[in-house]
Image (cartoon, rainbow, N blue to C red; front, side):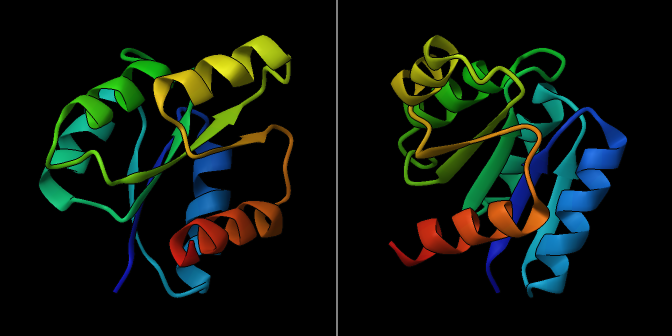
Length: 121
């Protein structure tokens, strides 16, 4: 089964995303901050990580950097969730190693489609 890590500090968004992805058949693990996200990435080795850019430390950008610096995790696909739709923030995420970004607000269907697309590609 495909494992997806969702790291988001907003409980409503976390529940919404996790529920949608579980409904789509993924094994979903959740984190509420960057520290939890890094622990779960190392323990569970998810196929894809959905990371909030603005979660409590370390933020999503730092989590991506640490994933990319670890050879055993570097292949993990990463989607960055950001409320900051400015081009510079999106570019910082891509520069850090994100495979894709989704700007808040977003529809759960849009995010689920992005997850499926990255897993297929």
